[in-house]
Image 1 (spheres, rainbow, N blue to C red):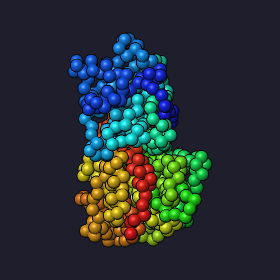
Image 2: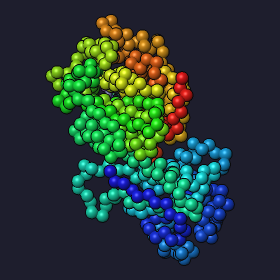
Image 3: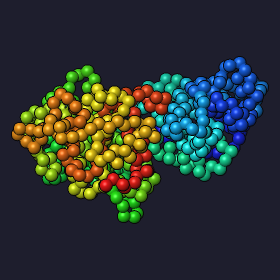
Image 4: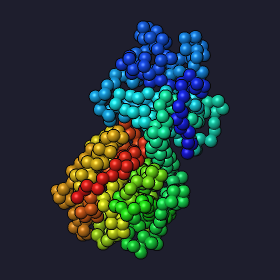
Length: 510
Ligand code: BES
Ligand code: MN
Ligand code: ZN
């Protein structure tokens, strides 16, 4: 992955001599004049012409070296971006998203003009300190600048844009605190973009072995503990779900475990991510149209694994264990069949009604194993688990299902501030009844109705009383609500929510 250098410099914008200088303007005119003295005469002129009023989303690009009003600027271009009307009473969450999407807008403008080096003049914004303004803008720029071109080998000379090399903030105030904000944004954006990279890889470019290799490398670089279980160990441990799903494939399964431990004794948060590297449906084969998208069925695993990098860098006070069960779901001659009965880790038996309901099978083993081995205080799992969640919530909300109100609230709140909104769906005995089997303890489908809930009800059987939340990201992992900083294709959803949740972890669940 390309990495963009982000710099905070205590300097006046006049001294910036790169490709593009960006100034953010609100319609509260007074702020404009205070903020950018140098530009005031120019802005007043423009404002008289009604060319640019600082309204939200307004853009005006100027070429300083061509004029004389603001000839003192050395930057090749000057871009004014309107933020709209802002006041101190605005909700912080809204403001945060405004800055993030403005960052995305800047990245789009840079792409349009092939800008490699961009500078943003940093002003405080309503209730936000410069530190946070810089943080959310950086997040937007770095997420918006994302591109996956690994398999495009033919470049058109002069036409291929390779993205931003450098992002600079010029500020009149102390840089140390601002740098902290920028660092947080860089960490989490790198994690999100890493998750997008994994997801963008084709099914033959990202297999369970790739998950394992990536995790081992992360562990080496950041002093995490990594363990990878292979098929033999899974069989010995009795992980009948993961082994069963893998039966129809030549590609061996892997169960990847990454462990972060703080210095002092602490709670453990268990993260589990569905790492299904291609879901054909197995014997219950999916229709051909759209099957290609099932290479994204590993987005839960990608989110969990990528979030671990930020966790390793930021060293929170709570332990975090990540488990990624990984396999593809194919229909080879040994494949799992409808009607087969399997035994999960811990002994619960399950009748397979549909081999396409495979996600819950590999998650069930991981949840049961994770609880026995790591005794976590809480569990969060992420999975592209059901098409039904798209019917319910579209591509705008991730579904969350939980056996603990406080944990659900912590996650919903984390999602809200990241603009990765979560909507809670219920669990309950009525739904658990739908997965009762005549021949085994449970069955792996729950009929036509409430598909997202019956899938979660399956997982619930394996977590018992441990506080647990399940995030069904099938609607948001790709084709997520269009935004300036979310490209077409995989969104990396869940990564920022997990990081925010862990940064703010409070053990008040029971
Ligand atoms: N990976 C799919 C869920 C999915 C579908 C994600 C569409 C994103 C878009 C999952 O393994 C699956 O196939 N689920 C089935 C369950 C059904 C057979 C009970 C589904 O949703 O159709
Ligand atoms: Mn499936
Ligand atoms: Zn699947």
